[in-house]
Amino acid sequence: MKETIVPVEWKGDFVKLLDQTVLPEREEYLEVREIRQMWDAIQRLCVRGAPAIGVAAGYGVALEMQRHVSDSIENYHRILEEALDYLSTSRPTAVNLFWALGRMRGVGKQYETESNSVCQKYLEEEAKAIERYEENACIAIGENLLSLLEDGMTLLTHCNAGGIATVRYGTALSPMLLGQERGIHFKVYADETRPLLQGARLTAWELQKAGVDVTLITDNMAGMLMKQNKIDAVIVGCDRVAANGDAANKIGTYSVAVLAKHHQIPFYVAGPVSTIDRNAKTGEDIPIEERSPEEITCGFGKRTAPEGIKVYNPAFDVTPHELITAIVTEKGIVTHPNQEKITALYHNG
Ligand code: MRU
Image 1 (spheres, rainbow, N blue to C red):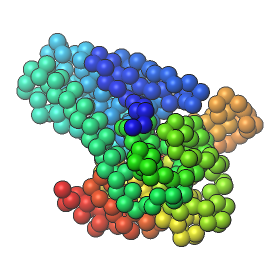
Image 2: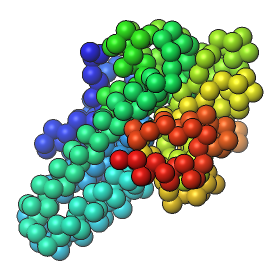
Image 3: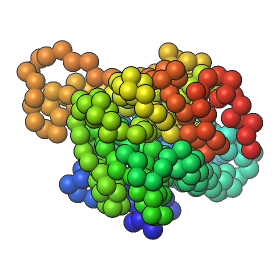
Image 4: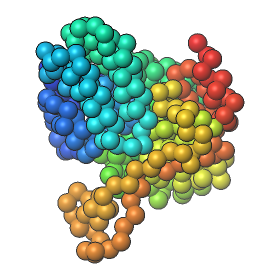
């Protein structure tokens, strides 16, 4: 069993968060005690990765509402609505944030005629249920991906879709981590993932820690490796999948998908059903976060571009469904995804 790194942990009166901004140099944890701190932790990427953001948001709401249990019922529910709206502004792309907040909102509505302490109990239960759901989904995604792979294959991944972006095994990294426990070994190339280096700082750290054979490359090396027949499959995570199967993931994913298509390498997108947004008809409807220019001009405190230079810094891109060999979820594998097949997924169990 690999050492379990818990990115988000409910502690009853605070939430313990792994501060992913200081990895791999330091393994430090934040004690989040109020909602503004949770908003800030999500915004600054202390907690990041679509499923982990959803889990953190659920706990953030539960935590905030603890402070209002002795308010009037009316006040408690007004503040609950404010808390839900507030956390929904922390990041725009990963739909798990809105999915988790929607679940918390549903519980608030369901118990709005009960006492605040009853509603509070169910809010906390719901936040825990969201975490359990994501953990089980990661295991099922790993099993499904393992059914597509063979022992000894060489895989490429982009960004970080491991245990620290989700719960426990990750999505894209789940077959590598599960496989490692079972004696199924893969060689993994990790794209460093400009500009915030989630591949170098997080994926390389996580896989190395688990004993997986991982090699770090810069983003612009993937094409050459593919041309040299060194990559058997690409596996990436996702932040929001549209109803037609277009998938938003960390910037650079689209380029890898185009390269994979050219080299006839399977390109798998791994994610729980909570990452599918059926209200987004196509990738065009997915909001793409733009982040601060300093992430590019002054990353990690070192100025690497002239003062005053114009910068464009979208944090995500959308891979059209035509480039995706399969979307691998906990409910099944959607090969050559399209709207019909994505809809059918909802009828699987
Ligand atoms: O900006 P981040 O670090 O939150 O982005 C996360 C990603 O895009 C990851 O690649 C991941 O695949 C999606 S969450 C498992």
